[in-house]
Amino acid sequence: MSIADNVRKPTVLILGAGFGGLELAACLSESLPEADVELIDHNDGFTFGFAKLDILFRGRTPESVRIRYADLACPGVEFRQETVTSIDPQNRRVVTDAANYEPDFLVVALGADYDPAATPGFVEDGHEYYSIQGACRLRDRLALFDGGTILTAVLRVPFQCPPAPYEGAMLLHELLTRRGVRDRTRMHMLTPMDSPIPVSADTSAALVEALARRGIDYSPGMRVHALDPKNHVAATDAGDLAYDLFIGIPTHCVSPVVEASGLTVGGADGWIHVDPRTLATRYPGVYAIGDCADAPVPRAGVFAENAARTVAAHIGARLHGTPDPEKYLGRGSCYIEFGDGLVGKVDADFLSGPRRSHRSTALGRTRDRESRIRHHADSALVHFVSRMALTGNSSRPPETSPGNTPTQNSPR
Image (cartoon, rainbow, N blue to C red):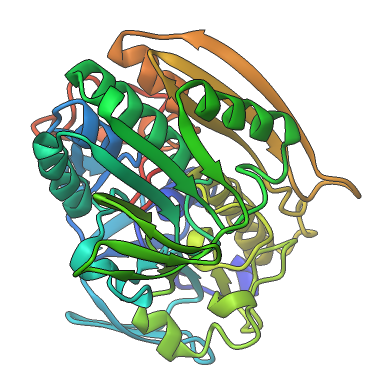
């Protein structure tokens, strides 16, 4: 299909206004002004993923770290706050609680949902900080914590932002030390993974060493199967472990509407199957990007942005009848906060060659809030907000500046 063959304006429908959806909307606005782009999300705004750590450890309120979609405007892009109720990928038909859509191109960027009930007892006796509500609840629980055993566990892989559990543990150590209760607290981290960041042996070694220096026990290759809320015991591969406070990284899954669409058929571990070179699904004109897709990269916003740029280029090539652009390379940078203002960085390249590559860098200490934000930045606000006009600043966090990345659900 070329523009010459189609007198009406081509339409692109993006489901989900997180990392990938926002980046794709901005790219299409810039590269395809002849297209009508509709961006749908059930939320009215987004929150930087790392801001949940600010809610948990630094006294920020949810409203202070939320950016409203209404405060953003982008030429050729219309944002609609609607809930997707069904997706028919074969016919490229989407139904929401407000309208029906049949776009020329459909991009699913609905992220990952959390399924705390997948671990028996976790809903009743566990805490998490991957959601805003969970971060607030854990913050309130920590305010009352006066010592004991804290178990922190990754409950299932894959999960969003591989460094986040280790950041959380080290920032929790910092908080408890500041409050004077660390000396009567045992901290123990469990994960089913063999190392914190499998693609980077150097980064994994640095994280394991950082945990040890802080007196945080670390048990790789260990799964938590269930919690006993009555006795406060976690059933693990190594037997029962008692705790006074259990913090878990909840099981991740696609949303019910994605699962019902059939898009996950053939996908790895229940995610949407995509061509790793193009992010295309098996349905013509339908793509999936970000956490909901089974592309062989970590669940992190920077990779969703990279995927969005790939999809924007492929849509442009289809409309203009030009050769396919460069394949998706799975490149990105991951930032890790160690506490006490220390931040590290990992640059990773997953798909461009026969071997995965990575480079880790210690960025040093950054004590002011703007520096922390810049170090946490992936790239979407550089590529998104800097290309979009802020029509109002009432909901914009005062410390936020270009160079940071928005996300709908993810801690990154």
